[in-house]
Every structure is written in C-alpha cells, then in structure tokens.
Picture (cartoon, rainbow, N blue to C red):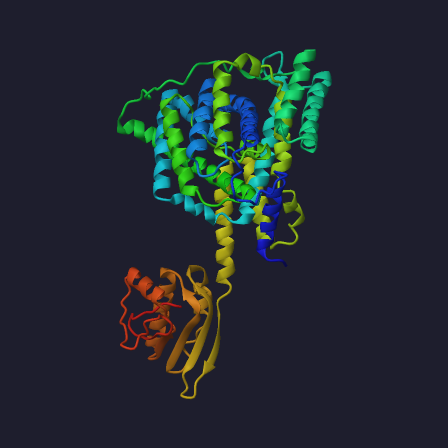
Length: 541
C-alpha cells in the first residue's frame, strides 16, 4: 500500500492543466502591454460569466438581481485589491444564498444587510486573530473530495439552463429542436475553448468561445435563452445605506446565528479556494490577509445593498485558465461588471446562456481531479473513503459542511490509528526491577491499550515505565498514569517514570498536577527520573 502523500502529485498535475505556461514559477509576469491585455481580457471573461450566476444566486436568496450583482461587484473589487491571493475571484455564491433565503423570508432584506455587515466584522476578527492558519488542518483527501464535489455541483447547476417556463409557469425540460440547438451551441463553445489555445493566446479561450457563439446567435437570430431572459441587469451605482433595523439585543439575537454561519461558510470556501489557486500559481500564505479582505468586502457590501459573498472557485478557475495572474484581472472583472450594470446591460442581455454553459462545462472538466480516480486503489482505504465521502456530502449538502465532515472523519481515523499503535516491550534488570519500554503515543484514545500493558499483581516491587519512545499528549493520559500509580501503590509497590522532557513538565504544570523536581533533573530535557507516589506524576517524552 502506497503512503498517503501519493495524493500530492495529483494536485500538482491538476494545477498543471490550467495553463500552457510554467505555473510553478512564483514570479509575477512582467508588466508588459501584452500581459496587461491578457489580464484585462481575462477579467472581461470572468465578468461575463459572473452575470448569470449573480442573478441566479439572487433568486435563490429571494432578493432582487441587483442585490446579487452589487455584491459581486463590491466583494470582487475589494478582495481583488487587497486579498491574499492574486488571480482569485470573489462574488455572490450559492453556498451563502441558501442560508440567506430563510432570513430574508422571515425578517426581510434589511435584516440581510445587517447580517452581512456583522458577518464581515466577524471575518475581519478572524483575520486579526490569524484563524485562517487552521485551514492547514484540511487533509489532501478532503481537498480532492472538495474539488471533485465542486465540479459536480457546478455541472448540476448548469442543468437549470436547459429548462424553460411551461404553460402553467412551471419550468420544464427542453425537448426537440430547442434542446438540440442549445446542446449544439454548448458543444461549439467548448470546441472553441479547446481549439483556441492551439491557435493563439492573445484572446482568452473562454472569451473567444463566448464571442463566437454570441456572434452566431445574434447575427442569425437564433431563438435560444439569453441572459436577459433571467432578469434585467440594468441599474445605477450602489448607494450607501445603513440597514434600517432596530439596534437592540433582539435584532442581534436574530442576525448573529446567521452571521456566524455565513462567516464560517464564506471563510472555509475562500480559504480552500486560496489553497487551490495557490497550488496552481505556486504561491503560499495569505490566509489571514484573505480573511480580512473578505470581512472588509462583506462589511462594505452590507452598507451598499449587497447580499455578501466569498471566493468563487469556478470563476477563479476561469480567470486562471484565461491567464489572470495579477490583481489586474480581478479588478477588471469587477469594473466590467459595474459597466454592464450601468451602460451595457442591453448588450450583455443578448449573450446566449448556451455560451456561458459551455464555459462552465469546460471549468467542470478542468476542475475535476480525474487522476484521483486512478489512485483510489493505491492510497490507503481510509483516504479513499474520506475523498469519496467529502465528494458526496458536497453534492448533497454544502461545500463547507463537506469540508468540516471530512476534517472530523480524518481526525477520528487518525486518532483510531494512533490508539492502536501503543505497546510495550519488557525486560528485567539484575536487581529484579521490571522495565516497561512504552512505544507509541499516550492520549485519550490509547488509554485502554496502555492499561492492558501492566500487571500490578505479578510485577516485582519496583517497576520502571520508560517513555523514551512515547509521548503523553493530554489530561486523559495523565489521569491514566495517576490511576496506574495508585494501583501499584495499593499493592505496596513503587512505580518510576523515566525519560521525561520539559514539554511534559509544562503540560503537567498546566494540568495542575503535583510535581516535584529532583536536584539532578537535566536542563536539556532528555532524561528525567521521577518516583511516582501518592499523586506525584510525570509525563512522557
């Protein structure tokens, strides 16, 4: 069985699919006219794909489409300017919208704006206290499951574009010629995106696919669903607006639970996207900076009539694949989106949804970690189980919940694995003393196995427990040692603990246990010998 780290090359291979350039180069691209043009066109591509998603997420949350579009603009602009990862795109997302819908339905949109402000404040605090570093606890199997689940979610989300209103107003699936036309345009878009990099890299392939298909549809007047069929995106500049809610504890009791959930979901998705884009662009760090950026963006959004947002993995993949590597692409996307709202709504509303579906289908193909399917038999069964579990939970529930479930299951598996590792070898010295040499960590999960190692009834009068190859990890382990000492004392026997390190001394002091230092304790924390009597305890190395 191969070690778990065979997953890491899969992520590296996954990253390499998104560019013809060497993405592992951590240097920023040179600021040339060609580079700037690539960044701007990449931003345009992202903005075009953002419009239908922002509108759709607004419908999910039960708010006006402009509320989602304003959120996409403000969140995208601020995070692009000061976020922790260049090239990452943020905006209104479905994961947040499904939480917001109950709040809007029960209390109204003003409570949503107040919640978004509080959500942003909590995210800023998370960044100040550097809580973003805990994203490193997400194992690679969870990351792969998250990526695969996300690809499936993006794919399923596009299925709604193949539905049209029926006679009774209820949406029904397309059939016949409309379905064939829609599928044909989707395939054409995907073909253009696939072929374009082989011809030129001047124009981002997704943008080329949108322009080609949109040109054909508009020129020949093809009757297919367009962006304008979802809703009008015409509007003005977002205006400063203090949420009109009572400033009292009752309001806080309403918005705080939602704000906590939204802040957690937003940060989890943003930090996972941060890591994913980092795998692609060869960059690390920036978690705390991203938390602050997301928090500031949501706080501002709440005061300007937006529904809040977080990082968008699908849009980030479009940006990276289109060549976006700097903040210019993210800033351009936000500004283009604002321009669409103010002056170009009539033009953008003519873009066929089939072109945008084709772009998202290519994102699905590029996002899914196909090599994860080939390594399922090579990695430990537990890692494969976690990967599949996270994928399933992502599809049927929520991205953030899936990650939390994956981390918890991975931690439990790790704890169980370590709990079964503890054992001991024994030997007797010339004076009849019995020595237990403990192997493996001593913590809450391994206490039962630790207790089974000893035989106070038949052991000699002096017993030594050597922790050279072990470590006492928690209070449960200390209590286990105390109970063991009591057993030997009850039998009139002496228990000694050897090879204790200074970190165990600190642990014992924090745990409030009675500890007496010997005069010959070493300063370098390598060998210590304690006699355990009536509660005088030690910890492991």
